[in-house]
Amino acid sequence: MLLLVGCKGTIGGSASPDASVPDAGGPPPEPSASACEVEAMAVTRCGGCHGAVPTGGAPMPLNSLDAMRAPSMTDPAVSNAQRSLIRMADTTAPMPPAPGSPATQLEVAVLAGWMSEGMPSCTSSPDGGTPTVVGRL
Image 1 (spheres, rainbow, N blue to C red):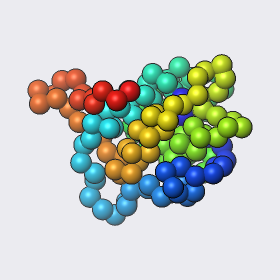
Image 2 (image 1 turned 45 degrees about the vertical axis):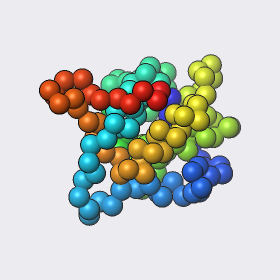
Image 3 (image 1 turned 90 degrees about the vertical axis):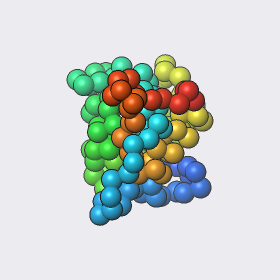
């Protein structure tokens, strides 16, 4: 699903891919249900090519929140999530590429929302089992 190339236009009112970068000096963000949605989206929409062992020319894994938080190979000043958001909105070189279906507005909004929250971890159920996922995807 998500990832890499040049920014064209704006996403969420900001042309700057670093507009959602969490403050590295601040406390870690609280766990979030939106993070569970991003994690599920990364596995289902990105994992086919960007799995633990990337295939089909994909340069890196994008199958976990840690992978999404990692510095981009294209521009280490931004995260893979930020580059993913740029690519999801890129009409020239979109992610996912054809013949895959383009990222939906909801998928873009979920990823952008997670980034604006500071890229927190996924919340867990009270018993520590299955992650809590709000049913937006």
